[in-house]
Length: 200
Image (cartoon, rainbow, N blue to C red; front, side):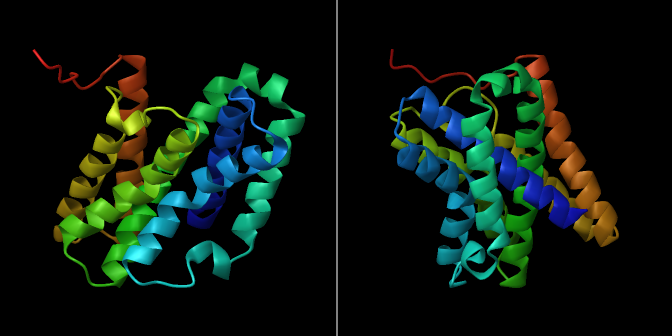
């Protein structure tokens, strides 16, 4: 199930990246590049920082195949996909929870401090979107009012708190992902946001 959600999250980010690029009227190659960096950008940066090279997607070509499939689905069904924004949002939200857990796990495998693990989890989940937005000449969503990266941080803190209580690993992963997904859904439904800091 864990690997399946990872693949679904990768697919969702590939499609969302491609749709964003097409909205910016990029050519087919540009659309593919944006889809690719959205999917693996965060994980690539994480792996480089912890010295895990070659990076994950270079060792497992299934991720590349999934991204290519997501790219073609977005291009072929781009008009119909606009009708399924809710579904895409749900997949994106699932990806957020799963990729946060992957970053936490990679940090723990390297015996890093929990604070650094939380940072890696947040980076894994969010920085593909940061790179996408920068390349598309947008202010990254995590730097705006929308609650996004904050959810990953909360999930990471919850993860280590429950881990300290010796919660079984499978249950720990389930609870953490449900928390992240739940907060993300409520943030959108109830329009939760962080206040913008303005220069007086």
